[in-house]
Each structure stands twice: as C-alpha cells, then as structure tokens.
Image (cartoon, rainbow over all chains, first blue to last red; front, top):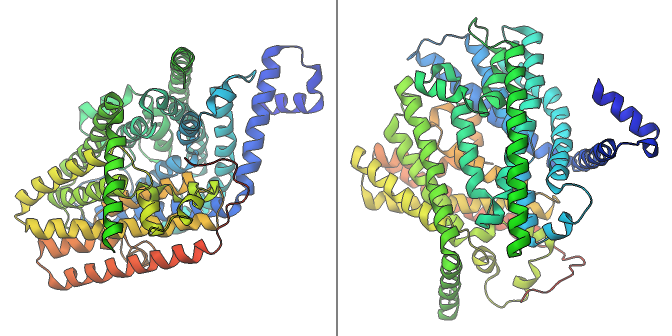
Length: 286
Length: 262
C-alpha cells in the first residue's frame, strides 16, 4: 500500500518532492519500471525461459512422485504438497534475473567507470532494475506458471489458496534478498575478474541449504539447524514451506521477522562490500 | 582439417592456456571456488542418498558417474570451446565479424576465441570423480573416457544449437547461460525421473540422455545397444546443432558495431 501511495505521489508531481531521499527513490522506481517494460517487451525470451522453468518444475514433480512410488521413506507431508513445494523452490530460482552477469559485464567492459559517476548509487540502480525484471517474471510465473503446476499436479496444496498465496508473497520478498546476494556476487568481479565462480558457490549453498531438492526437515538435524541460521532459509524453504500441510512449520510472523533481519544484515553487507570494491577500483584503476 | 589448421588450433590452445595463467592469484581463488561449488553439489547427493537409498534404481555410484561426466564435459567446454557459450553475446555485439573475415574454420574460431579459466580445474575434478566412480563400479576406464568425449560432443552441440537461437532472440545471453547450466543439472538427475513424454524430450529437443543416462547403461550394464545409441545420438546432435548454426548465420548482420578488435 505504501508502495502504491508513493508511486501515485511521484506520478502526480515528482518536481514537488522536497526530500532528496524521495527523489532518489523516484529515480530507482523509474529504473525498475524501465526494466519491467524492457523485460515484458522481450516476449519470445520471456516465453522461452518460462517454458524451461515449467519443464524443470514438471521434472521435480516426477522426481517426487517416483520417490513416493518406490516407498523407501515415509514422507511427513502429503505427496502433492511436496510436489508444490518443489515447484515453488524451482520457480524461485527462475524468478529473478541474472543480475550478477550484468554487473560482471559492466566490470569487464569497463562501463562501470561511466556508471559510477552518475548521481545515483550504481548498485541500488542495478538492484532496482533487477526488481523490475523480477516483477515482470512474477506476473507470468504467478499466473500461468501456477496454473500449469496446478493442472499437472491435479490439486491445490492442502493449505489451499491461503497457503499458496502466502508462499508466493514471501517468495517474492525472498527473491529480492536473492537479488542482493547476486549483486554481492557480481561485485566480486572487481577482485576475481569473473563473478561466476563466487556466484556458483553461493548458488549451490542456496540449493543445498535452501532446500531445493527436498524440504530441509528431511535433512540430518545438524544440516537443518545450520540452514536455519543462514539467509537462504528465508529465500527458499521459509516461503515454500507454507504449502506443506504440517504442524511444525514456521508462522508468517516468524518468516517476516527473519526476512526483515536478513534484509538489514544484507543491506549493510552489500553497502560495505560495494564501498570497499569501489575504493579499490578508484585506487588501483579498472 | 589441414596441417595449417591444426597448428592454428594448437596456437589458439596455447594462447588460452597463457590467458588462464596470466593472473595466477585470481586464477587460484577461482579454481578453489569452482571445486568447492561442485563438491557442495556432490555433498547434496550424499545427503539425499542417506535419506533415500535408491531413486529409480540409481544409487550414489550412478550419480558419481553422471556427475563426473557432467563436470568433465562442462570443464572441456569451458576451456576448449568457451566461445560457444558466449555465442549469443557475440551475435548481439556483432563480434562474429572478426571470425567471418578469417580464412580458418569459423566454428573452430568461435569456439576457441575465448576461454573460461575454471576449465582445467573442472576437467581434473571430473576425472577424479570418474576415477572414484570407476573404482566403485569396476567399469571399463577406456570406455568411460570415450563416453566422456561423446558427452562433451553432445553438450557442445546442445550449447551451439541453443546458443544459435541468439540469431533470432535478442539480449538472450543470460537466459542461454542459465539454460546450459540447467541442461548440465538435468543430465545428472536419475533417468527414471524422465518418463512418458519427458523421456522423448530428453532424446529429441533436449538430448541430455545421450550425455549421461544412455552412456551409463552402456557402462554399468555392458549394454552394446546403449553404446550404439550413444554414438548415434552424439552424431545426430552434432549434425543438428551445426545445421541450426548455419541457418542462423544466414540471418547474422553486424549492424553498426562501433569498435575494432585488435
């Protein structure tokens, strides 16, 4: 709601904004909006990626159906719920654009020197663009993607629309956090000349500790506990667990509290890391 | 391939090796990160197989072979044919002009035009994983190496075919990179997961089955039919990818590229 009010205000009369802070927010909103429009404009690319995502979600459904058929373990959740869970975690990986590649390219091509002299934070600009592109993805994945998954599984999760809606909302917020870690990975290109190496490590941690392959309560206890103390917990498992119909799940308030905590930590980390990298660039050159 | 082309190929390979070793500290850090990245993924499968003893008849040793083949393939591609991975970006930037005016084979120039420094470490790590898997399953090592090369051809063909879509799709590089990575991940999933229509997908439009699933049958079950099928799939993938590339190339235009390659 605050977001909608802000957009209305800046649309009505951006010149009247007295505060520098609001002006900067408006500029970031424009970056996000431009990126959203640009992303929606590339329909063929959007569709192609969507088809891939749906295929991978179906593969995950079959993966869990196979495990359920073979009956080697007693799942504490209904099988349809696990299938929904697997699809949502897979969707989370596809939801956000590859922000670290954009930053990596800026560093490698040297364009970052031109972007740094703009009167707006470079990293805030890139994250805003990422949020814009992610919103375009969310529009498609949350409608057509959910419809495809529902059709393939044949039923809603046992927590119904409420559980699914809550999961999707937190998945969106978790993906913003994911974008920030992508930005951190991208900045490592200033040191390593390539952002991919760091990103791949982060991505694997996200996949393992986030619970992409299976819900983390099925992990050994020590790994489950370890996961709870990492930000990837609120990016992937935290949101997706709302479709798992069981009593030991976290409440919305707990996940929201954890998300806010990790947002604060990550913003601080990103800002510090960004400043350290930029000062290194200024001292040593690109 | 003439003698001149072979010596040119050797020079390109040497240049790529020199480039990889130019910044040694950064190279060492990236290598450690890359090995860590693969080790984490293998660890995940260890955790999964601790919980679930078998998935569609696959156990840890099957995953080790599939993943070993996958890493080896990824490493070979990154080091010897990284240019194929960046093909969509090169198309967007009009960078193919440099190669089109060169008398040497176009595809070889594109493939070896750039390198990913992680390649050698991934090749070594893949071979180590395959050696462990070979020891656990007592499969034929020469056959394993041969099938590793087939897997490389299939994966390179996949990357070429899907990368060539950049001739039709603009600003497609990031999506393509994501797709290559997902092909690699899918190829390391148990074969039984892909049943019914999915089974057709992984032998036709996304022929990852020829990378790991079918070679695995040839290796573990000594299935001659599977070996023949792998060879057939490898050849067909290469021919199809080249055809897609040639078709796309007819659409290529450099536009108003502003800049010169030295």
